[in-house]
Length: 159
Ligand code: FES
Ligand code: FES
Picture 1 (cartoon, rainbow, N blue to C red):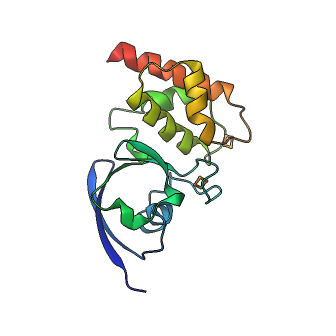
Picture 2 (spheres, rainbow, N blue to C red; picture 1 turned 180 degrees about the horizontal axis):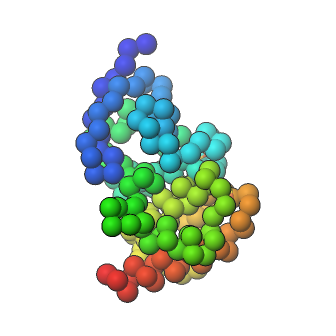
């Protein structure tokens, strides 16, 4: 099958790749480009492990074709930390023990970032509602929600 050339931006860097028209963004991120922080859980839009931000919108990358990334700005979990250190969400997930495994955690982090980008001061209800598309089978959600609320507060006070 002939491949399509795509130019996009990932975590602030211009990226080019070739993909088949049938390939999902998740598949290309992980297997072609090496952004393995984006996880494959269900591969059918139910778990949120593959969450990325595309032009400011939170999406499940398993449900989007890689060719749709043309001229988009994508943020993966690898884009949260910077040379100065971890993102406040990452620090608060550690402090609150809001994580156990590496499958769901990147998706929660990316989803929470998308929320705080839009709403820097969410209520607990808003956090829980926003994260309803991200599934975790082990921590329960309380620690994750507390971590997001604490990160939001930290980011507001340091802004
Ligand atoms: S892998 Fe995409 S939603 Fe589960
Ligand atoms: S910590 Fe990953 S599924 Fe719960």
